[in-house]
Length: 180
Image 1 (cartoon, rainbow, N blue to C red):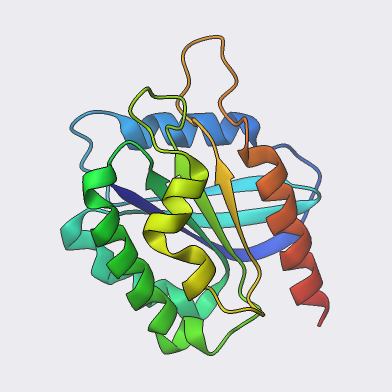
Image 2: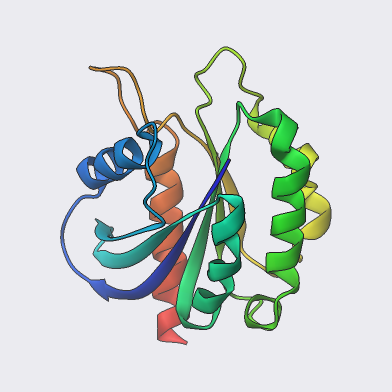
C-alpha cells in the first residue's frame, strides 16, 4: 500500500508537527476508509507545510501527477509489511520520477518513508531501498532520504520515531530551495 504526500506552499511559522502526524496517520489507516485525499498543515523548523495526503490505491494514483508542478517536496510512504506489492510500488515510483514535472526539477526533494517498521513481518529500510532500487534510480543531484517509522504506534508509544529528523531535513531543503 502506498501513501503519497505532496508538500505545497511552505511558509515560515513556529509550531510542531508530531500531533498532526499521529492524527493523520490514524485516519489514513482506519479500516474501510474511502478517503482519497487529506489536506492538512504541519509545521517543522519554522516551515509550515500544506500537504495533500493522497491515497495510493490503484484507482487514485493517476491523480498524483496533477500535483507535481506545484509541489515543493514529495513524501512517498510505503507500507513495509506489504512486501508482495513492492514491485507495484517500484513501478509507480519509476513513473513518478520520469514525469516531466518531477524529472525536470532535480532539486525537488523526495522523502521516502518506510512505515509500520515495528511490525513483526516488516522488512528493514535497507531491504526496502533494495526492492525499490533507490540507490540506482535516484539521480545523484536529487536530494532524497529514506526514513523508518511506525506512524501508527500502540497507545503510549512514540508515533514518529524516525520521522522527526527526516521532516527536519525536508524543511531545511525546502527553505534552501525557496531562497534560490
